[in-house]
Amino acid sequence: MAKPRTRYVCQSCGSVSSRWQGQCGDCEEWNTLVEDAGAVVTPFAARHNLRGGGRAIELVGLDREVPLPERMSTGISEFDRALGGGIVAGSATLIGGDPGIGKSTLLLQAAAKVAGRGLAVAYVSGEEATDQVRLRARRLGLGDAPVKLAAATSVRDILTTLSEGAAPALLVIDSIQTMHSDLIEGAPGTVSQVRASAGELIRYAKESGCAVVLVGHVTKDGAIAGPRVLEHMVDTVLAFEGERSHQYRILRAAKNRFGGTDEIGVFAMGESGLGEVGNPSALFLTHRGEAVSGAVVFPALEGTRPVLVEIQALTVRLASGATPRRAVVGWDSGRLAMILAVLEARCGLSFSTAEVYLNVAGGYRLSDPAADLAVAAALVSALSERPVAAEAVAFGEVALSGELRPVAHGALRLKESAKLGFERAMVPASLAAEKAGLSLTGFRTLGDLVDHLLGR
Image (cartoon, rainbow, N blue to C red; front, side):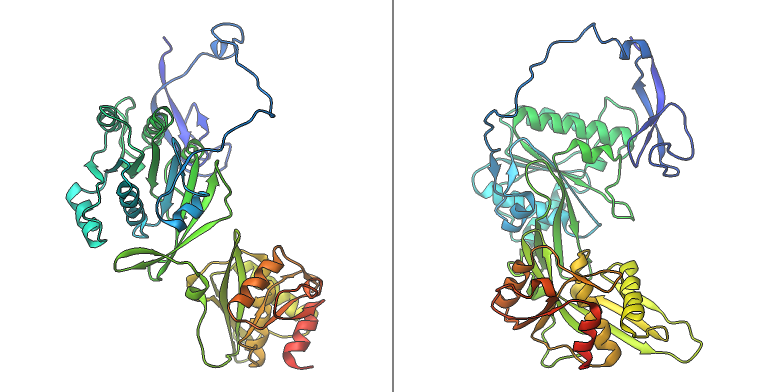
């Protein structure tokens, strides 16, 4: 039998080292190597013996017919949308998010809806007592839901209990960092315990056909705590995003073996829990009676769903010699610096003596390069104190040369804008020929847009 030896596992990338060192040699992160005691290290010769002990495997072609995986609806359409149509039987899903964002609330609501259809559902909490879960269920109006509750942290006890009868259709583990396996030494939450506990639960899901949902804690950087290999082990990784000070929440798929990762689910936190938002644009648009300088509406795209958000800019002139400030919320500060540089170098505008503040209304976070044109229009409007028409939207990518480049799904963005009552759109010239039910104004360069906004 191979002798157990101590090894060290990187919590960031999952690489293994035979000795501790300050920096991981693979991902180059510092102080991420953690001792993983009890591991069995197989001798080199045995690892490279290609002849003994193996068995022949069957090689198949790509042209075989494969049935689509069977999905189970959670009863929450926004949740199903993010999953790609529902939870796949026998799958393992990991959902992470900041503390207090609503992960447990969302899963308790989904568990209640699934159980309400006559399916067996088990909810195991390692952080709360069963009475605490019951109190939350009553606040959400789910006190009568036939969900089986348990407060446990031993994976062996959980699996032994579940194996006594028929496997449930859905098993929720809240959270994976509180679970421990008696097969591995170490406290709950360590790299070895998280990996071993998740491995046993995933194996149970594959063998029994039960859909397992694991709740994961996140670090201060927003990454799921524990070994990086955990995200590789599961089938689906969901991120529950949002600010606790704001009403909305976004459920986004970062990995999905059974569907795409371009869809999102939008929720609003209320007194009775998380409610679905069928029209997300209503959350992020400011309803104002008259046009205001520095405000421009941008049709963002999340998967196949257009979401209209308002981009707000404010400029404040400073006295000579003062250092201007640049503050941005909801967008990339580096991209803001690039847009300001293009406006100065290509369009002749001066922001060097002005403080610039940029905000995406409603706490929404943008990563779409199509927002360049809307940001530039908001900055020009704020600097000149000339409002952009309230019934207009703007989108397009800005190149360093000042050229406006087309973006993906322009027709879909325009269609959604027209559906919500907007009448005009400022777009790159290549999109001006689109038929979308609203008046289009195309611009070849950013300078053309500036001339249009300033009335030159």
